[in-house]
Image (cartoon, rainbow, N blue to C red):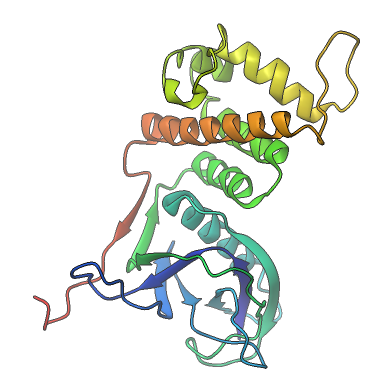
Length: 266
């Protein structure tokens, strides 16, 4: 038996080394993660031949209880989203009785859009064994996946909050120390004098509290200027999450073990 999830994401993988400018076509690939094998099915079609989003599957040890596989799947998807920096949202899921690891998936979802981010599939995706890092990547995946700039901001804020809980002064002190970092995010606008106060009062509280005390700014979700501001600030927080992860867990908090060269390529 397998546990299967169809995922809405532009990510696709191949196993061929790239030579020149031509990219190899997407393939169905196996990626190892935390002692399990996950199959990324990229080439299947729907019952009427329509293009489908990828489906990710993993073999289930006990068909009557596959909670462990469901948790492992979520951790894998979060690591994939974090490592390649792409949105990834589960749109369909099921337990399927197929015996073969590479058999066509049952959980499918018709694809909309044709854009792809194609990467050479690693043999294994490796993360440091730290539950705080795992939680950071979970929030980061939510931020990448949501289309709402307001809830995208909130997810990245939560990821950064978790990543900063061990630093002196926590998130407020760490954000204030980033004054001048990634200044290009502000474009022609003046950066705030106090990054923490700006992020907290004008963004975080405004998202969490639709109605605020008199004199405090409230969000208007129909204001295109507000939406643009939150998209900008969300990208800033996403970059700061990556900065903090590298600072706390090192440059290889998430890394890949590459596939060995084929004998004809060596």
